[in-house]
Length: 326
Image 1 (cartoon, rainbow, N blue to C red):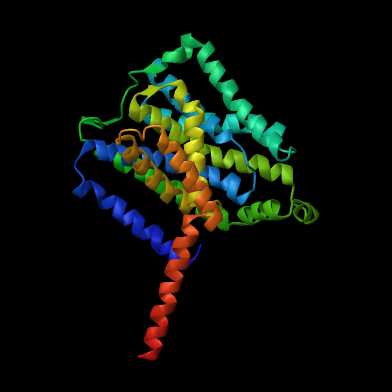
Image 2: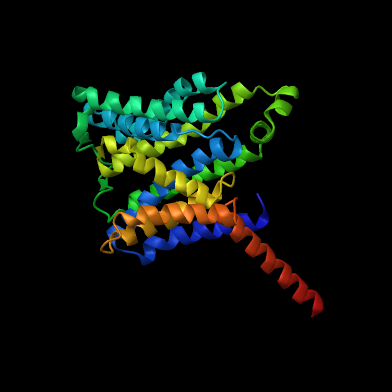
């Protein structure tokens, strides 16, 4: 992680922490919370896609599994929502292991097909087991978070805002540390040259299993938090619209950067919401996002974060040059 990107990350975190001081509108805070949830999914998807080069749709299943696991625990089994949220991460890790084992030795389109099929299988289980999952109507009136007498639904979403921001910051920090570890370097070796990685004693199949499981934990936690926050778990969490939106965040932000997808999640969440408020743009907004993704990949294959990083580097060099001349 370069010095410039570290500065961007810290500055963004400070600004986001100050947002509730100036933004009192609960709906705007709601958009930030949704953006943070999508950002968690996007940065974890980036670990498997950007660092390991494993193009898959499994994170849609991990997100939905986490949401329904938390909802069933909190609503049906009356488990504390504080325990149901991390339990969503555990359930997602189990789902990731089930997906990873058959795809560990597959390549290309076959990985995409198997992981997408698994998400659709999870959707069919949700729809068919209505007694447990609520079927097409989902699970509603899920208990909300409380701390003693303090209720998270009576503070204009302030508690949920900082909790979701904290989960995002923790997830990004752990992913950045993981990316710089020997495990992260082995993932890049598998991505860039699997045969060379195998010749150096790196098990390609094992690394794929590990990266899917590692990237599923916070994805499931995000799903659990999503269900507890909205107080509903519906089949829409497995929808193709959710998948395409989060994938756009990864590709526009910059695959293999971690920070890029998080920034893109904020931009796309607010951008699509703004376009939804314009007459005639309700459906066209998805076309605009697709065009933006194509344009970014054409101009900067490494994403918007690379453009931002190069701009900061150029500015630093100009400042240094000006200082030397003076």
